Length: 358
Image 1: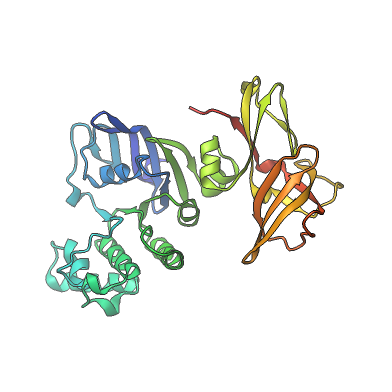
Image 2 (image 1 turned 30 degrees about the horizontal axis):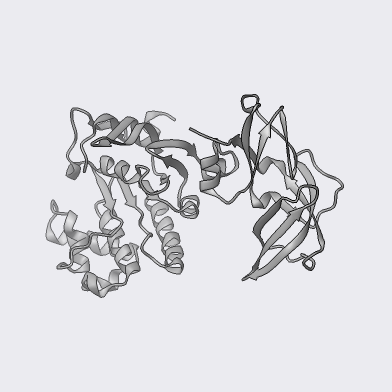
């Protein structure tokens, strides 16, 4: 990726609060006009990333660039108000004494009042809140406050848009609706966006690219499809999606599992490993015939079956090992409890990692 294709770049960024290291020599590039999601558990350094980008923290080590221009290093920093950043906080941070329109035009101080009002009204129209412009924040629902905060962040047409857990305080139904609306708006605007989230589903939906973080490090970065189908470590595999897990000791280049023999990389021979299987790798009701190169057949006894809306929560005990697998399946062909079920496993969705990772 050339420099003119990078909207936001972190190079060798480290940061600490006292003795606590929150970012460890992180390098990350956000392509121009794209949405990159920082995904990880609480306390992994995601929000510090945003604060450093916005200029709300002094950079201790490394460099940050906007559209190829350095905005911060350990010795100098461009002031937050002239970086061209739009920032949406997790709790929205609307001014309670200002109306919706006044909240949105707050960051447009360099323009005439007429221009401020014109731009603020347009931003409110874009988020579907034009009719609420005379309301005050306490009169709005959580979803409506989210839309106003987004309008305030986009109204100055920033170079970089920073979103900190923008949907975390909303109920599930509203969150899904607003995620979809926000995604369409961001794609329409084409603003380079860095979004923090702890929700894998949200990252997969919103992000053109995802960077998975843990304890101040970016463990893996790429498209959602790449990360989901080709994780480089067990943490990324399990954090981004559901897995079935089996532990075994690898004595050779192949380890025996309840699903069949699985290849092991040379460096893992002579150690305990975690074999992870995506639930969607399993096709139920299949016969032990016509198997492809990347497939294995296994059968088991159905021991539990419970309807969960359109899906079924099932438990099967695999033959030959007694190993139990529990998963949610939309397949409607399950027999009665106690009957045998055949399964084909797509081995391209099986991963082997060390039992203990650094």
